[in-house]
Length: 106
Image 1 (spheres, rainbow, N blue to C red):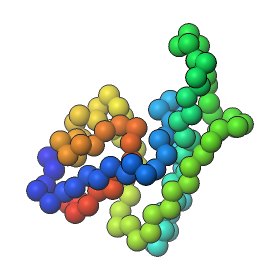
Image 2: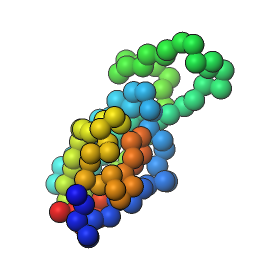
Image 3: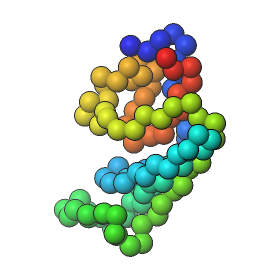
């Protein structure tokens, strides 16, 4: 359960991560955090009958690089989109396939 001081602020100014395979990479030190991920680029001609597989060696994919300064902590990993409703910040609006800044987290 979220504490009364927790805030989950959606970062709408960041590019939408790929909902299929964002392939995130994290680089961090004591002062800076870099997050690189594949950006969602819908194909207007896709009819839903095929699957496009993307991997680390795929060419021509758009990548975002986000820099965060003076962060206190980093959590990377679960839950996935099927278990997000069990996350303690879900009641504050945390959703899958989106970027959030968590303020005053316990």
